[in-house]
Image 1 (cartoon, rainbow, N blue to C red):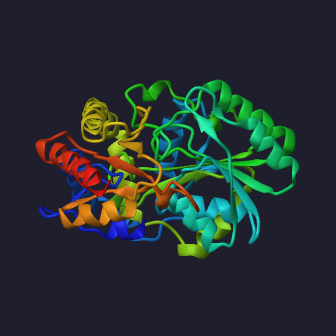
Image 2 (cartoon, rainbow, N blue to C red):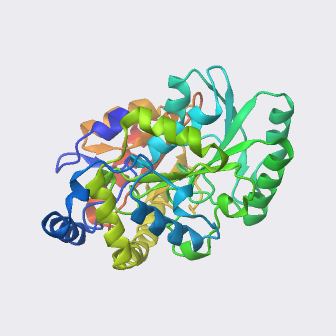
Amino acid sequence: MPRILAEPGSSKLLRLGIAQLEPDLVPRRELNRIARQMMRTSGSEVFEYAPSEGCVALRRRICEWMFQWGATLSARDIVITSGCQEALSIAVQCLADQGDTVAAALPTYPGLLKILQSMGMKVLDVPSSPSHGLDLDRLEAGIKRGSLAAVYVMANGANPNGMTLPDDNKRALIELAAKYDLAIIEDDTNHCLNVDHEHLSSIKSFDDRGLVIYCSSFSKTVSPALRVGWMAPGRVIEKALELKYALNLASPTLPQHTLERFISEGGYRRHLDRVNAVLPGTVRHLADSISRAFPGARFEMPHGGMFIWLQLNPGSDVHHLRQQAIEHGVSFAPGYCFSPGGHDNCLRLGWGGRWNERVESAVSLLGSLRSQLG
């Protein structure tokens, strides 16, 4: 996955494997205006280190935002991080040691897999379905074996399949975690990328024991370049703060103040309304294009996010397909990035902008290349 992130988007390479907003949906003018204004008129605080836990004004805004999802928190419950990736890394370090196992529904977010791999940890696959959610019987069996340090969950618009867990499954997961005193790492980065985002619940909203370490960011909803994320570490907050300080002292100050102003002025709400007026249509166009270009392939419409998880016939050579596609100016995310083993016949396609003829042609090209490979 790092290689995919390093691929430069250009007129010669169309990146369908990157889950990020395209420039036409990034609120560049508003962010530039706010940042310039703050550089001119703010005091010295925007040029100094922020506290390790982050700027208090932004933490308050995040609490107000999360209250809409049913989570009642205060600023002291929040730690600002350099993107969600750092939040996840801190969460894992708070809960697990080398040789431990973390449960997750495979395929899953590659960044989580890299964290576990780098720390010498293992993954327990817990099957999941759009209608029933996580297989809690399988999870409980893993717990009873005494091998689990935590369970990682993307409950809303999961990466890479866009699945959202039913509320009953979210509640049952919390009940199971409470029964065994099991920590949950909730990655909710795609919460707001949904037409009905106001009505989605987080697992954190059902947590009254501090079992959930909630992680999210503004990378998917505003811009990945800002690198501003956050976590609500629950009962491990003191350890999380120590790790945050050890990693990089504090997250950059100016982006935090810029985002706080963006939220307080109503810009974030207006921006999300614009994004959610576009992305669902883009995903529908993507699904139609996939149906035409990949007859017989299997996929389900996602509940959130900006991507579709596509399963080709068993034995399909996705690695070779990707090599051929790049030679023709198109990149995608191969399925093996999302699993420690398997999913070699799968791929994730996505587009975080307005649908256009170039994207349509790219999906058609991928289908043609796949047919030629057999």
